[in-house]
Amino acid sequence: MDLGLSNKVAVIMGGTSGVGMKAAEMFLQEGAMVAICGRNQDRMESACKHLQQFGSSDRVFAQTCDVTSQADVNRFINQAAENFGGIDILVNSAGQSVMGHFFDITDEQWREQIDLKYFAIIYAVRAVFPYMVKRGGGRIVNINATLAKEPERHMVATAATRAGLLNLSKTLSHELAGNNILVNSVSLGLIRTDQWERRRLKNAPDMEPEAYYNELARKRNIPLGRVGEPEEVASVILFLASKQASYVSGSTIEAAGALGKAL
Ligand SMILES: NC(=O)c1ccc[n+]([C@@H]2O[C@H](COP(=O)([O-])OP(=O)(O)OC[C@H]3O[C@@H](n4cnc5c(N)ncnc54)[C@H](OP(=O)(O)O)[C@@H]3O)[C@@H](O)[C@H]2O)c1
Image (tube, rainbow, N blue to C red):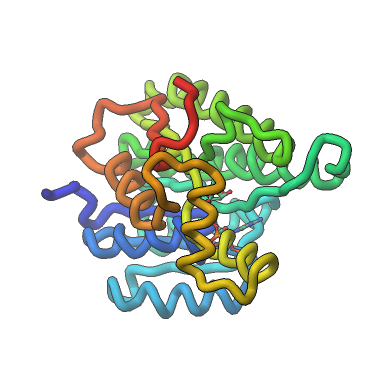
């Protein structure tokens, strides 16, 4: 199926690892151009090298950028637009969660989550807006979590800020509709990315990865019986960016193996 992504420009905040990098790979396979960022220079360079297997080097633009810094976000997005001559798609995938109950989370951790889950998105949307307007429209995909609708006590700060982002995404879909910019969310359950690999290496370094993830799926009662793979999220991102999703805005698609009961 032709997704209509050939020669589109996709900017992926946090595209140097996990879901963001897999989406970058798949956008390149569809003939798009991608701009990726992350904070860590080494991870950025190795992601860039990896992505060049899927598209020529002039189709990949990479820069370090901390998405919680407005100056960084403006610099990265303006230079990506200059490099490719415009922007069609924004994927907000940068981030990580913080574990902890209400009385354990420090003010600093709350502020980090608010910066990462609200301000990073606000900065990126403001920065891409004029470029999408010039193109006559665009797509914004915000990566979220099932936690937004089903909070868990041990992830209070992440869950609360995720709920806010879900709300913001809905408002943005209304606000930007007049500019033909479609805004949607993908809500993740448990996806096997570097985020989980770091936890596995910290908590169960001697356990076989397969056994660890099977146990995780069992403990979390994932109805499909397994943890998800990054491509199972990236394919939803590509759909939301595709010409086939031209009437989809303000929606949330769950890529979570039927985890959770919220409607
Ligand atoms: N995997 C899951 O089970 C799961 C579940 C629910 C939601 N999510 C969400 O899905 C998104 C993608 O996560 P993932 O699992 O793909 O994680 P990942 O493999 O750890 O990738 C996260 C990416 O975000 C970048 N990043 C993190 N903080 C950043 C910052 N302040 N500025 C710029 N880049 C930053 C990382 O690069 P640097 O570290 O180099 O900056 C990396 O490229 C995140 O928002 C995450 O919270 C994931």
